[in-house]
Image 1: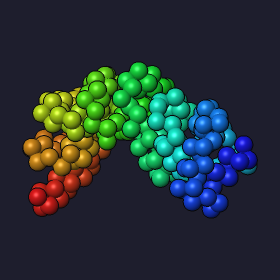
Image 2: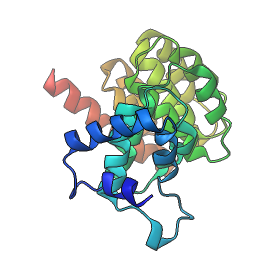
Image 3: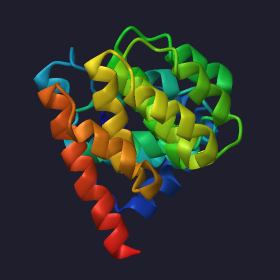
Length: 227
């Protein structure tokens, strides 16, 4: 364990040297990637045993290189909910590169933590694999607004025309939280075709919906000015 801790310490090994050594160790120990993944800190990890942020980033860099499959993902998915943005981002990239395995994605979408489910969907945004469409559409039935919003945005990235009726319907949903989500997604797309719907939500009776709609309007205007 001490040797692996050192390997994950960027102050001791440059990335290239760490990767080279990890590849050599993986030949001798085919379970090395699983052992590394098990070192990823969790909320229950004692402070004295917790890897520092840069070491977690290095750990993810190593796994991204030496473990191309999906067998470490169940040990890493909780990092999508890590408070450290850099760790979340690296975890999302690592997972996003491996989400062609729909069975794994479907299992994770059964997680009881909605933030984990939402972050997994977000990790799929960069994949652009056609198989992701199935996962996105399945996530539309999720009870959590953020999961649904991330799924619709994922659909938009793959097929904008399919996302339009979904977003328009969400913008007219009787639940304010769903309309908030619609405003957020419309703003994130930067797509001016949603402008009339966002303008309507600016007049919504719910303050939170109006607030998100105003933010979306600013994003749409910025997108228009940048065009």
